[in-house]
Image 1 (tube, one colour):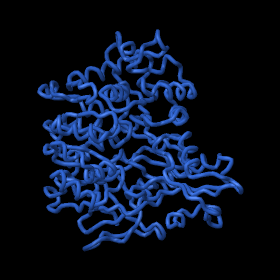
Image 2 (image 1 turned 90 degrees about the horizontal axis):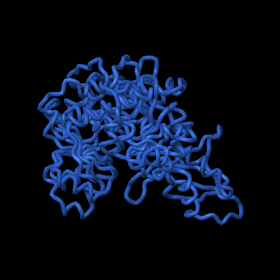
Image 3 (image 1 turned 90 degrees about the vertical axis):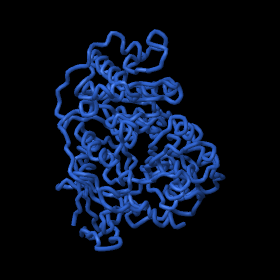
Image 4 (image 1 turned 45 degrees about the horizontal axis):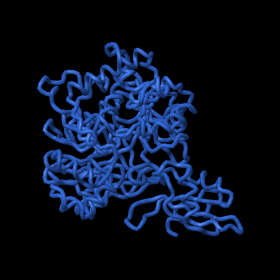
Length: 535
């Protein structure tokens, strides 16, 4: 039996994400500060930000980029990223955001698959961006380096050259319900990245679904450390927080000291984090050196947050700690704990061990993966464990050029099968128990085991290999390799770690290695990962 959202239905307008966020903005909000870059200390008002977005869109249109085109965006968090991202969408083009930690090979693979015509990047990432763009067939004049030296110096236009003499933003005509706004990439257990097709309606819907539950206001100051290229940061920061007319304090990367200083200096009221940050907030002595009393709420996502850890953070910081759940294919938020833990709407606090309730205008169900039977919400306590399914307006349009994978995750009735095992309680709160899929989540990033296994098997001294997620000493899941060495090999664990590190993005690196005599496999040849996890 499915269970619908307990929250009131929300209106989801038929509009582009730009129009939904910024058209009709109140005059009183235009001169509010929208963005603060912590490194440069630059402040950008809503008026200036919207003007720069329009100019960026006009510049793209002047280069023939618009509806039907895909533009890659490879950069860490900054106000320039926010402008470029929304400028791409404002032009009618589709943005494929690229992980700032990607290697040249990773970049090329995504740009090729997405069919990107242009790549926008920054100087610190130029080396891998240039190699990746070239491999994807993108010409130098279509590789824009926002802070670069300019076309005459290195052959790549910079922001000043791109925007010089730009015409007004174009009048674009597309159907928000079907036109792709963004193409983030989600890796599956096969190791093949899949382009997640999210329409303007998907993005508009998810902001509309979560805004009343967050309850953000123009007086809120939000610390933006989550990467904008990831769907979590993209939706809750670049979209939802800006829709609330809040102030975004932007960090280009996580550093605990900078994070704490950002809260203290700017009197941040809300911080969105992933669980590894919670570990530092609960345990690191540096926390005591900063005044964090402005914080009202910390919301964790991207991976399950241990309840004891969450309570430790809440006690130490003196604020609410809540968590939610989602995935790229859901734009991403499907389940949420309101900032007041549910007290106003539900008259009960969601346990911190839960990810809260199904978002508005949506429904969930839990299904026994063995029998296909639906598991009913209980009258009390927790239900049996089953796979979490979800249906709502934030469900992706599908995987790019991959109908087979799309059919495997979205059934004929429109239910998206998350691949995660969950339970539900009598109040409708959902608890994530484990994953059916084998994807490893390391610091909120997705690491496909098959990709690392393929790399390992290219080593001449490795006969066989398997990779699973395993807890390290702090309890965090890390990629662990089980290796069968060739006879007579003197390969060490350090050799294996170094070999893989030279070929993958930093977050994908193998962190632990165990040498074994044989990889356990089923009769059909599938790796028995559950046996390895118990080793």
